Length: 141
Image 1: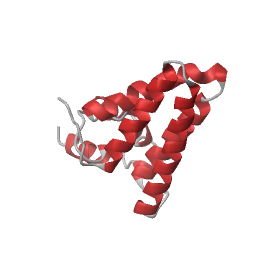
Image 2: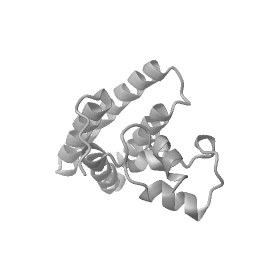
Image 3: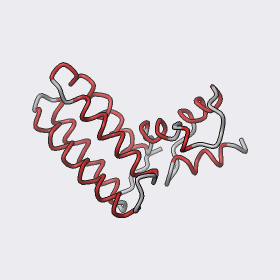
């Protein structure tokens, strides 16, 4: 089940970011640096578009940027494999692990933090749009 969203600017941001990260994990640190710069640009774009730091797309990009920055020191660069693989999963299949993690923050959910919620969060099928919309439909399952 492929979910190629070529008409969405966010999808293009992620495609270029994944390509840069792939370039980085292949041995060229500049790929990581350019991915961070692009993610900062993307974060600013979504801040201006959504007009709120509380907006879910802004939060996802903020935490994604945080992961990239934490991964930048030489001793931590092995961590770049996580966003590289995860971003390709987002681009191809629509599965965004970062969005699912961010959805678990207390201010992004109205359910108690339980094993059932964690299970639903990470094993609900990808949908078009926000991962939070998919959880609403999963409540009836």
